[in-house]
Length: 260
Image 1: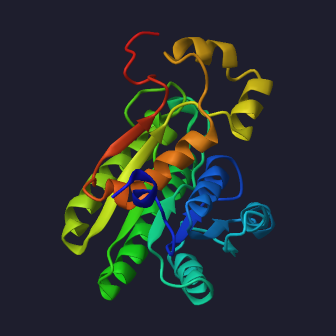
Image 2 (image 1 turned 180 degrees about the horizontal axis):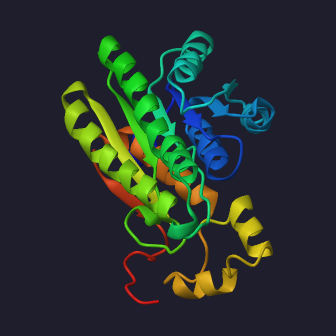
């Protein structure tokens, strides 16, 4: 099998959460470029529609879906609409996430719950629903969770984010081992610092120093959303047919480099 054929997602249907901007938008576009029809889910359907418009301009099929993925009944509604309008889901990308800066002593119980519900509970609910349908059809499938280098590195004032992303990594491994017999592959991408709207906002507020991040990254620059999109296409495709339970770090060498 040639690499182009192995990476093709022609005829596949994908659902991407948090698809309205940033990495989620770039993943959605990359999946569509590889041949998949893509349901773009976000809290604000009008922002998801912006992603859909970019995809349809490429000649691919896409659907904007409003979703609150930390609530079971609304997850069910998101899946049913996608299945009705696009068809059975072959690929799920759990991308939705939040990151709040607070010291541990300033964090509230609500802060903790918000991180765990949005970043981790959503992965549980969406993955379970996707796997139930894949197992029922006997079709197999691919689930790609978007974690973070914060899932295996400690960042001060990021307790909720680090803890929830560590949970995503370990859920990936557990789900992978449980569902391998059903031909459902579950993998995780752990991005480093990616040039997104959020990173630009943190830089403008003086919270992040972009030049310092570049110096700390062995490759000397931030990643692009397309880098994460390419990783998602690979893990969703037949090119990764014997890969499951893996954490693919897309960070320009940040994690491997053990010095500040």
